[in-house]
Length: 119
Image (cartoon, rainbow, N blue to C red; front, top):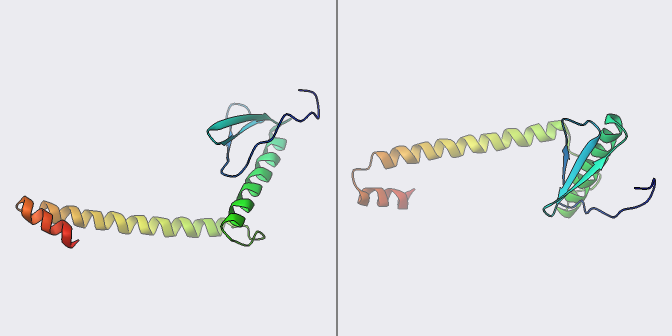
């Protein structure tokens, strides 16, 4: 490719940025079941590209969800959401264990059907 010549556009809505562990200057953008490969000059330039692309994707995603575009979630916001999700997952796991125990204690199919209806 000639230096500075434009080859096309990549839509970022719903895009996922990927990096290659073997080459510290390349990265990918996957969107609409297509993967586009890019190469920066070096690892530092790749990090700048990735940071800028991820920030842009996040900003536009938040805009589509009606969130203030000036709002950028912090690591603490992420950790809080992760903790909440983990708590809900644990509640679900506990409920499934109780449900399974209740079904195991049923003596016949009729009792199992009744247990399922009243859960």
